[in-house]
Each structure stands twice: as structure tokens, then as C-alpha cells.
Length: 79
Image (cartoon, rainbow, N blue to C red):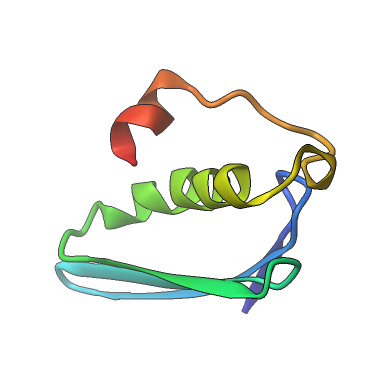
């Protein structure tokens, strides 16, 4: 399990992979929710950070994003 606070909210996550698949389980403890990312691609891991960022942006009030980062156009295209 890893803890990520990049965008001001705590995300606890753990991932795994095998040939042709990537996965990650995320918990946003401040919001009481979790999410799962499942891909059938060796490159699916590139979706993890944009998905975390998007979840925090959609869920959180502005004060929970102490250091907001602007979404890049690539984030918008991925999710």
C-alpha cells in the first residue's frame, strides 16, 4: 500500500500487474470512497495518476485541494 498526497487529499493505493494487465485499488479516506482501475494493457499504468487527480477534483471542495494543479489537456483526453 502506498500513500499519495500530491494533490492535497490522501489517496491510499495498491496496484498489481501481469503480462497484458494493470490494476490499482484506490481509497480516498477523506471522502469515504474507493475506486478500482482495471486495464487489459501493458501500458494501462499511465491512467493511474490522471484518474487519481480527476477523482480528487470531482469529489473535493476547494479547501481540500491545498495545492491544486491545473489539469493538462492530456488528462482531459485520458479520462
